[in-house]
Image 1 (cartoon, rainbow, N blue to C red):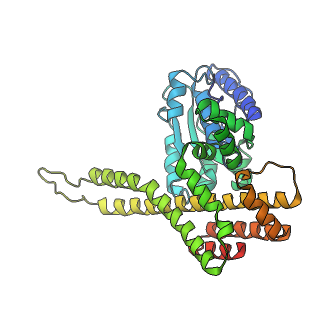
Image 2: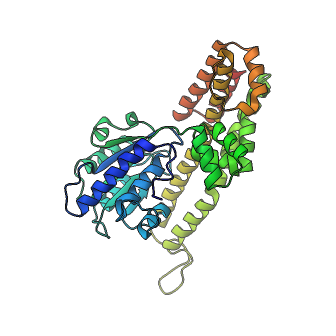
Image 3: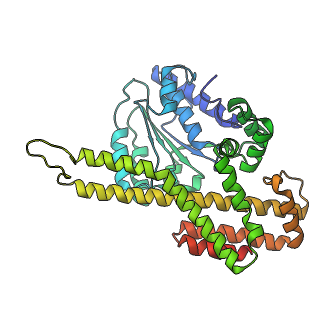
Length: 389
């Protein structure tokens, strides 16, 4: 049992990281440690486990036994409480230069337990240009015993100057059987349900786990995949777009409501609201209003990101549906992600041509591009629905 055992279908990456962890131990002992470097870039498609791989590698670096999986060091890393691990993720649409500079200052400290200071930067592709330039300087001149672990869907999502200074670890989409086996053995999911979830998630492990264990996730999938057969007129297209956007908004509100309340209450407490005593009042002290406004802006940005991510996940579900339609039209002997909807796939395959299916897939991808460019979601999704009709 090691920290790398949870990385499904990533044997090649695990081999590289295991050798590097052993080399890192040699460096700590005063050796040369060939194969270890100060900056790593983890890339791979959504669901491949980029962040999981980076966190497992962090545990291996901080563990005296190169990631045994059962010591206190490994446990602290995996639950996010290790003092020498700094894990950050952009909460909003991007990661600012101010946040990056604050992170670099924290990264400059020496490791408290004598091994490594590890900075795990999730979604590094969301750093702004100024933030990326600041990050580049930190990677070019790293403090001793500081290791940067950057995560991004593809190498091209980062500046070439950053990519050239990182060792690349490429993760692949795990196979359906491997994901189903994990759900069955580790989560106790019945095999039929595990196989369905793994196939529907197309190798996206966290998505597969949600489909296997969460009834609400399965219901949302059914609602999204029911859209193609519901687009019988212009009115139905507009209604479908409205439902899709509203669902994304509700998911964002549900995901952020409690967190927003806790953050706001904590900030108000820090700035003295409700305090009593000589020289104190029950309102915010000077500077509190500005800090509260800054927090509200960050919370709005986070809600927008979650809403956009929810919409994007729904659009990718639609892409998988039309991809299966195309496979049926060509008679391709490939696994269908939505084989449980085989009747709907066959019906649409008979009523349309491969060219029409490709145009529909293009319409969905164009909608994703428009959403990424901050086009009004309702307008972008309505245009897509009309193209799918």
